[in-house]
Image (cartoon, rainbow, N blue to C red; front, side, top):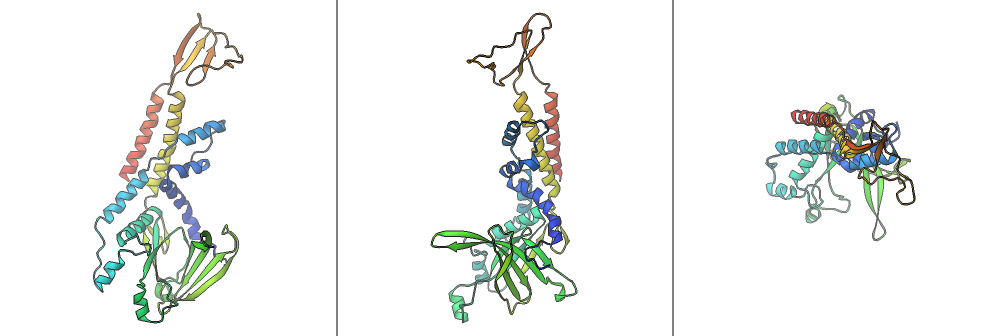
Length: 341
């Protein structure tokens, strides 16, 4: 109850869905790095064969394509701002994150992509530090403006909400952060932090170790008066409850991972059986000397020696193509299901 870094049980319940979607968003390299989960080693499969199978497997990004199309359809027209000081807001919309490169339309695209992929995403409204500003003229001269920060649902680890309190608005949120802190003249180090927001105030806690698994200590706190609301807005893909959601495209992500695994099986089968194997019936075993070491000069590097069926003979065998056709048909079925969804 007093651990600021502890995740809400609902956050823990949502995490398996995020892992599935994250695998589809990250693609081939992520899946290869997590091969034990997505392409596990088969019984009696040699380690070298398993690693070769994993390295030949490539992920087809159907999920990413569906996500881009969905976001593009929703945001096919630019966002239009109306009312207030239009000159002020037109200038503000060109750099809504204070990073010099993200305008309002791009920011909306990023937030909506996260919401549709993961189930929800959050927008935190922040403002530059004004502790040294003592007049409105100084504020205007410094060109200080509010800016937006996207808070993915994976970082919002805890919240408190009771419809009977604070007019039904959020009473507390906790956000995990990774801060880039200058070290010396040229160095940079990363700090694990948790930001706690409550009506009219905030706290910033920092990990006491580099891994973020140790304790946390309070390093900063302050007031957000006269603003009493937590400046957080949530965009839902599929809302189940307050800050509890489900990825609306999760079935497509699961099908895409199944397609990847079946494509891996087909690639491995073709790798093994793409060339016929020589069969030598009624032939003596090959000599094992210092020159050949018993090796066969074939691209698949082996041959099969069998007892004679009559006269000695040499021929090739190859698998029936029907097995590969069945694998391809199953992969096409998965693509059709993703397309229909």
